[in-house]
Length: 186
Image (cartoon, rainbow, N blue to C red; front, side, top):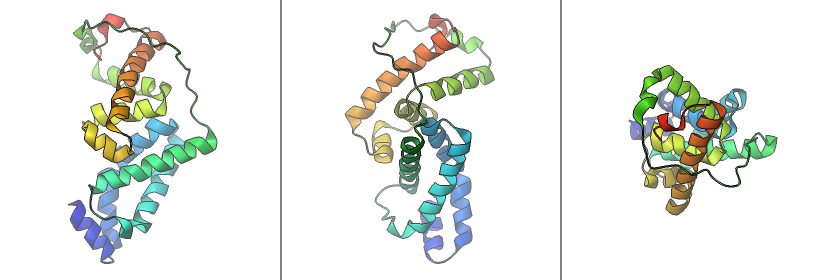
């Protein structure tokens, strides 16, 4: 579908871009929120990123998936705005807490909506890079290689960020929301 839409847009059918927006707006918004952690700015980034994608579509070479190219624009715009507004206010954890290998599935007792709420709130409290990698890996089910393509970071860097993100997310959930450490399946 992407190749067809891209070709239609390049051939002058600006309405075909509507399909691109419908297809990718939710994920692009999620990526922006992971980094900027502000709904207003995330919407601003979303609009700007789609405008940039439309204007620069002729530069899309097709060597990667269109979604990868688009999400890279969203990520770049998000980090640019975050630097500009210094929106990331995250407590620095000097030493990461130890997590036991014991996995208890009692978190499943929480209602699904509660789980989503707590996880999304916790994602807002951890560093942007960690939040982004967790969303891409777990929520969007991208592989490490796909995340490398989307972010431009190395595979080893993604793995380190993912490891730290898991620890920080669990720590945030347990400390901020006073959830039982044994009930978190991360």
